[in-house]
Image (cartoon, rainbow, N blue to C red; front, side, top):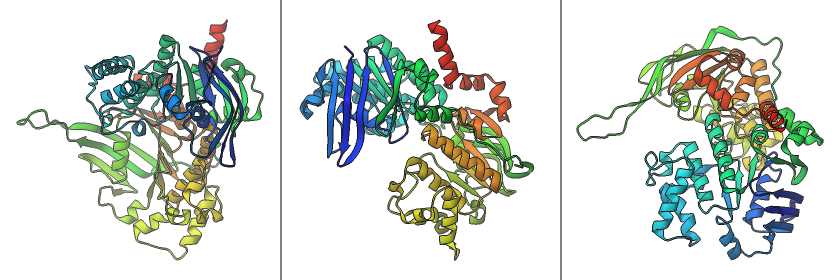
Amino acid sequence: MSLLTIKDLSLKIGDAEILEDVDLSVDAGEILGIIGESGSGKSMTALSIMQLLPSGSTSAGSIRLDGEELLDRNEKQMCALRGNDIGMIFQEPMTALNPVKTIGDQVAETILIHGSASRGEAREIAQQTLERVELPADKFPMGRYPHELSGGQRQRVVIAMAIALRPRLLIADEPTTALDVTTQAQILTLLKKLVDEDGMGLILITHDLAVVADLADHIAIMQKGVVVEAGETLSVFRHMQHPYSKTLFSASNHVPKRAANRTIDRDDIVLRVNGVVRDYPGQRVSLFKKPEAFRAVDNVSFSIGRGENVGLVGESGCGKSTLTRSILGLNPIQGGEIDLFGQPVNTDMPNSLRAGIQVVFQDPYGSFNPRWKVDRLVSEPFYLMGSFPKDTHQRVAKALVEVGMEEADMDKYIHEFSGGQRQRIAIARALILEPDLIVLDEAVSALDVSIRAQILDLLAELSDRLGLSYLFISHDLGVVRAITDRVLVMRDGVIVEEGDSQDVFNNPQHEYTKALLGAAPDIEQALAARESAKN
């Protein structure tokens, strides 16, 4: 008998059909990967298992854990089950953690809620659990707060909370989406180790096909609330039957087509960064000793030509975002120079200069005011510049059409759009001032593979047609390779390698670049390894 068996599961929220006849199973010690785009039903399947559904939901079918029906349990019975027999890891650790409680207290809380130990014993178990997720007490005391940890370390704390009582089933909902490649590899290795050590079942929900190709024993591909294909991982990848599965697989390796007559003028410099240094005040350790400054950016130099797309890659904390804020004139620098179109960049940049450089953020929903309609959102740069052209409405319509939206979308609110459509609207807002340079800060990292492919096609087409230059910041090396002409590899505030993208990716010279490429999941390598192990 399987550890978890889902049979003919259907879910409605009001009159909306969310899931339809879902059949899944997970054995003890097995990893099931669930793949699909946003809205496919992946997360709602997980929430159905946990019975954490919104009001107005009605479920039918069967969800059995070790033969015991979960759909028949009341809320009190499910509370006893959650955390104890079923653990869950959420996508964004910073929102899953309480910012005013220490990491030790938060891991111990699960144990205390279930009455499994005294407060002292719970603290001891919490410490042991943090050790298991590779957060030893000598380096990461239990008295630390979430904001004092990196993204990968916070995700380890969330994992510790989920496994503190050694549940039989662990559900991981997009646990590595926002992490850089090396941290992602570490978290996935940790999850695999925990499954092997505890013999628990793991449901890994993700839109990254390379991750499940490497980690999952079985996979299920979902579309619009239906499981369209399922089976043993190698078999599904090598013998895909459903058109949707083939579309996902194709999109995961998508490379945008560039215009044959595309021109890059590296003599016409739109951005020049020369010897830039950015320091932050260090922590004071003595009343009489001046704190040492922390150098986030150390003597960085590069340039971007007109029409050129340059990638900036590196792990979290390498200095990418700090450098970007300085380029945008949001942070002062302590050394070096930044020139935009031949004019110096500083925190007092004139609006005429700021108009030439725009930015697209990672989370389009978080960068928009939900109370405003799209017309007001896209025209926001005009408000900030204090200049309102008479044809503002027409310019907004043109920008929306440029990114594949419709003029009628101006009268809608941002919550009415999908994630990919929101990112298109964010790009439209960046285009409204007709800039020459756009900074794309993790602009596609949170998108599904097929939506990501569409956005990359759009960005390539806009750059080719309008002669736009891009500074493309991402931890997704596949995306950077697909869209950029040149790449800069950053580590500890220093550019350790740079060159034409294909040259760097095909023949990396620096050990750090090699480590980044080695940590990036690769579908074909993962499948080849499975075939080799089978033979």
